[in-house]
Image (cartoon, rainbow, N blue to C red; front, side, top):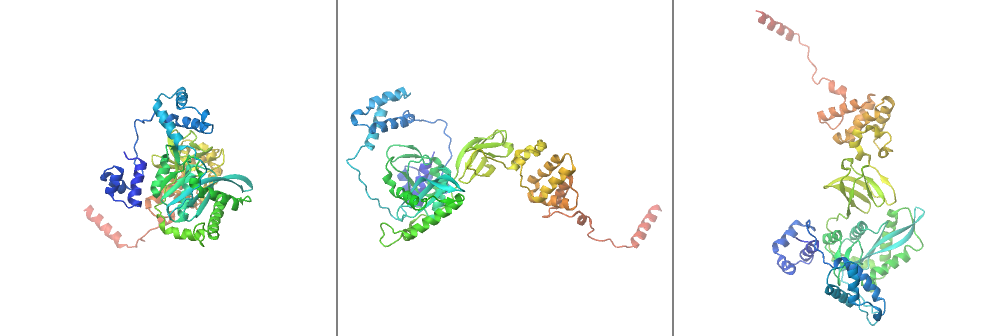
Length: 505
């Protein structure tokens, strides 16, 4: 079965680098039919559920071993633990593998972290469209009069030094996706490589050397946009020194003194303006006499063209509570009450929450970033209202329900005239999925005009509208008018009398 990494390489080799199918099959040791299957489907993921997951015995103890090797690395050599001692400590933690695996891993780790004789800084050079760098920073702003700590995503083109900074309330995976989508749109193209820290939202596990186990959703992003992600060596900030310098530039020139804004929309609009203004007024460090913005204009033709927009969400499972709510990030959101007790998938975007069950959207809400908030959509509880219409009186989802004006007026009239107003009003609301909100609103408006307010009248108007198949509600008086007025003709009566006379004979 093809994994995401293999599919990404196939797409990069053929679609970006222009290699033939034969050469790609030879390089990846795959059949040409497999290469054609990937290219024809244009998919970046082939689903496969493994029945048995095989794991190396040492895999679960890598983090423990890394931590102890890092502790020893800070000590003088004569005080460091030997490989045999570390192996014995892992055995006490529950490791039941062999010593050779531990010894080889320790040798490799110590070789990678061997000390040099001095601190050497080597200048880096990039070609147009070759690479970009990504990083986060934390800044303080005054938002709506309150001090707020914001997370700022920075993405910078390595050749031209053009950059974009975007502020978010969280430093999560969906924010990483949103920052990439905004930056690629801002640049009008994509570089061939992306350089990152070992972010938890990007890298699942740091392997030996430059090998990384990238997050599956992030691999889909890189495969969709045809760039190759590269994670820096831990502790080697110089490998992405440009973005480190940019963080200080934005902090000194934009966030100092403290910025006062109303919300994140205003903050990001001002950040974008700052990025463009800075690029137009600052000289490029390598191109003599040219600004950063001029270098960016020269780099644009070398960027990869933008594909269709990537669906940048982070997916998480959740269970629907008996109140037809799901919990996420210390807030609760309503879903269709027919899915109470079932497990659903949350598609978390930077600005909204979409709840999906078996490919069907059963909830869509604007995302909240506070705490202990509950977001209701009253229409999610319509099926429950049919069984419990009395809950309309004091139900939390139905307070401040923003209904069309004519439906609100019907609601008030029913409360004044009928003791079972809640049952009648629920009967009108349940017609919305069948006829649509606009049709129900029109029927309510016509019932108010005729001063005949009840569930039966509204439903009758809706039925007549459906039976005639017109786009507007029908006027009852107009429906009863004769289309062809009869002509008075007495000869027809005489003719009838003659027929009766012949029948009698």
